[in-house]
Length: 179
Image 1 (cartoon, rainbow, N blue to C red):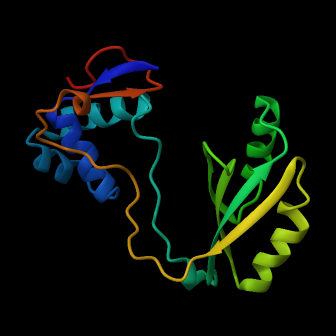
Image 2 (image 1 turned 45 degrees about the horizontal axis):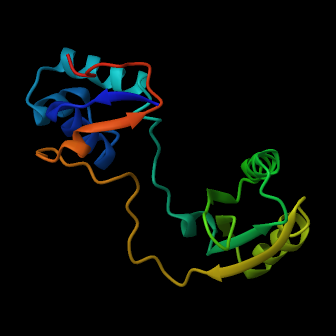
């Protein structure tokens, strides 16, 4: 991955957009201490560099009838790269799986799954997940409540620590994003 250097203004923009992706460019520019045209150029450069992947609304699952959130710890019988990718591709086709993370250790993957109720989750488990190729075991953990939900990452605006000022991204740029 190429290195993209983010200055204080870039970090400020990222921080504010992460907190409120619907913020207007004018408000974003004011908060970052720059005018609107350079702010828009910076946002576009951050998007093109891969630093910003997209924008979305945080929807309450219960309002849409998804009353169960479960985390499935999945073990596979093969850790060959082709089999891992095939599993990830299959998981990507399941809409109720909201997150998939490959892990180091005893469990190969952890999946965050939403379902309308426990029966809906069990139906998914027995008809799709446990019968998937190479799946040897699944351990489910049911979420009782969410004590914290904070998407994104911590972004330090005024950081003196060097490792935080250089983020490594699948970027198109090898220079400062700002300008």
